[in-house]
Length: 138
Image 1 (cartoon, rainbow, N blue to C red):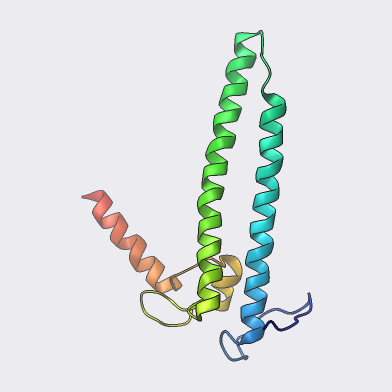
Image 2 (cartoon, rainbow, N blue to C red):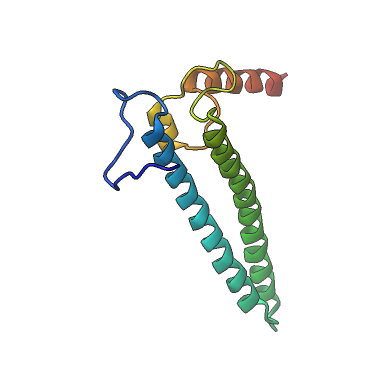
């Protein structure tokens, strides 16, 4: 049961929070983001396969290996990002999307627009980062 939303629609503060339109908007945003990542990964894989040639020059080979390592690290980060996107999609389905997992309060629409995989409100995220700094600095 999905509601149709037009491309111009943007969630607004004066609507009920996480109404059907907002959930559908964020579902589409997350799915499009995931599709973009998967498309880029496919292109990278193709690029890596095309690059998989022997470089007679040692410097060329070293440069190629460095590029390959960087691309593979980026792909690993994107794999983790896809897991976070999938988790956000699951939260949309179970009704917990958009609510801070620490306080239960709504996460601001601006924050969700900028970071649709957010699980903490800005305030909770800042507290979390402060605690991390304190423990890291010890």
